[in-house]
Length: 197
Image (cartoon, rainbow, N blue to C red; front, top):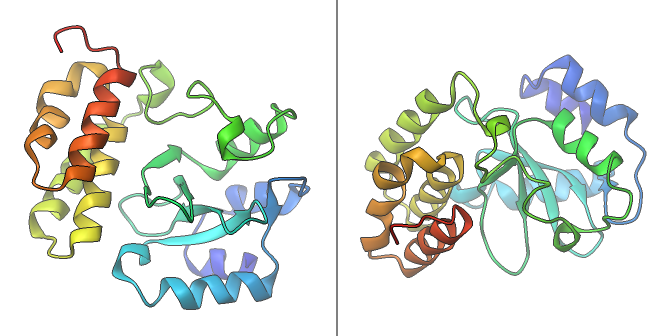
């Protein structure tokens, strides 16, 4: 797996952080065989083309890192129940630090919204290239034809958007023809405790 991450040009520091992580219940580094099986599975579907799995909970759920140029290095959670690939952490390092600082957390459901960097109203979610990243995602969204990819791009845009961008980056999705995109927009308005709504 580590060699593949190098091929994807994930930074040396991030790879080193992952190499030094000791697996524990709920957060298990993928063995090469499982990693290769997941890559073969991902290769069959356009919606997974930009991620690769790095950790599993042992129950067919995976933590994945983005390997494409737009979202490179960000970490998302792939649940076998519901597809939502919005970023949760800005980097592998931030993800690993969160696991190591919360030893009472054993799976995704044990985290609360304050553990994640995205979606967030906290200053930690602000970084210099965030606005540019959202613009790139909107551009990709306009050009995308695959329905699953469209849904995930919408989720990413909304997750990266801060409270002051709700009207431009979340409101438009309330009228989307995809009910899952509408639902996520409503959930995020609640997350942001947006008083006008």
